[in-house]
Length: 270
Image (cartoon, rainbow, N blue to C red; front, top):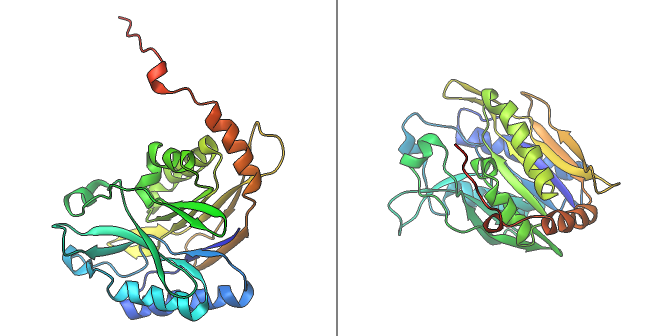
């Protein structure tokens, strides 16, 4: 599957951010005509100190912009994180939409694990969706969802061939983030495309360094990762044509080796 991570720098205004995103997508589609899925980072719009000014109405301006991009450039596009209010919920959600190349909404995935301050502001998602696309299944795990082994493992056990992860990782968290991504990929034998925020937000530096992690074909053990990484502190994109057949083979082996925790006896010695 041919996939790409878009890494636009967060600008001062929403219109500037829209321009940045579209410019990168234009460059991508000029160079690679047959990209299957393109992913945006968790945050690619400006951040206001007044948190409530960051919320969109359900299917609001950011949604409509990404929808239009998908239709205009004939690409299947993941919206990254959109903070949206919904009529039936007291709290907003962090959600990622998936649009097909006709600009039609296919589905949306809400962020399940909320990070630190987010727990006081947002409603966490309760459902993990496995999306079928061109004979391939994928899951969308937004940022903190990758920090817990259960969500990627549930995706793998329920047929996901790869994970897209829109993220917002600041400079201080890059070391841990690298470990999380490689560990989740290895323990589930599953490729991960992680698209990170780029720019200065609220006096914090988000350096990008988006990653597409896949597998080198060869022996099933030890499995060897192939990591393609975007530049630090630089806007642009990364593109890769990843093999999903070999990971599928070694994933079935890995999952079959799992011992259910209910069958492991816990003894406490004092």
